[in-house]
Image 1 (tube, rainbow, N blue to C red):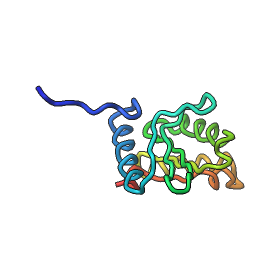
Image 2 (cartoon, helix red, strand yellow):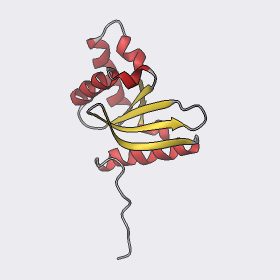
Image 3 (tube, one colour):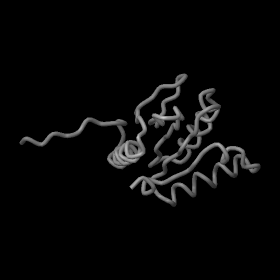
Image 4 (cartoon, rainbow, N blue to C red):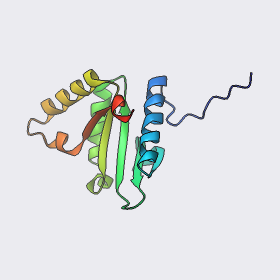
Length: 127
């Protein structure tokens, strides 16, 4: 029919893919290199933003369905040696999902050390 479906960036659901497209556009608007589907030390991350001028690296994961799995992923990612020099953004489906993830992280670490290492945003923040 002449309609071409764009290549998937993350192999995720429609909402996950939408988030990836918005992050890609946001990153490019900021003159960043945007990469998807990374494997760093046997950990899969949804993507990376690299500042062309400074070389600053920002890794991100998109969470849209399973809070418990996302918490495990966040903790695992934050323990990677690459996180010593990079930032990490968790992109949640919506504010409710973000608040729940933040609440669980705070319960796991009342001192708040985990929350200091992750920036929690929502998909809407990239629109």
